[in-house]
Length: 218
Image 1: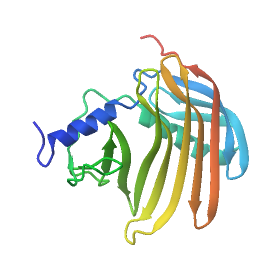
Image 2: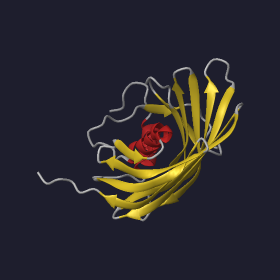
Image 3: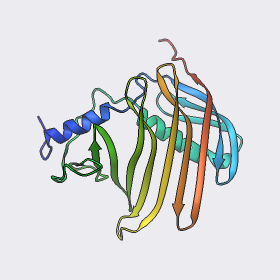
Image 4: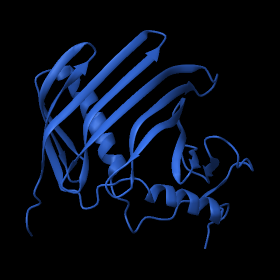
């Protein structure tokens, strides 16, 4: 049964798009060497991403810790396998435009972030969210299939808008690269270029020498 306000076709379209994304089912966690640049300063050290997604770092430049932890934590969150016990999402079509170049517009019924999505060719192409006083739009530019034919993000853009005035605050361009370790697609490179009124800022990290963690036997 579909909850009040939901549309069965919209829900199926969204769920199929989620199922097409590459994920880390039964993820044990991993460690890797990490280097990069944050605000013009280089850093290096090691990173550990636990099975639950928690990130711990041992790097030589403390100014980079918060950003690197946020980025690796976000990657782990987005690759996490969905729980079989989760409730079905409740969505509906926001309009009747099925010819939009980025796909059908779906909107969540209720929810604190007023989320909406576009889906084209079975993949999520746009994510819109309201986060506090700002609105955020993520536009997917390039996905690539992994060994199982599931989608991995390679590049996307993010726009941040003032929620009241609609003024564009900043734009980010994001590039991801991945490597296969066992049956998992793990990150090897992230570059985030941010353009705002204060100028252009580039932050990056690279991961190498990945090692999967071994879960302790019970």
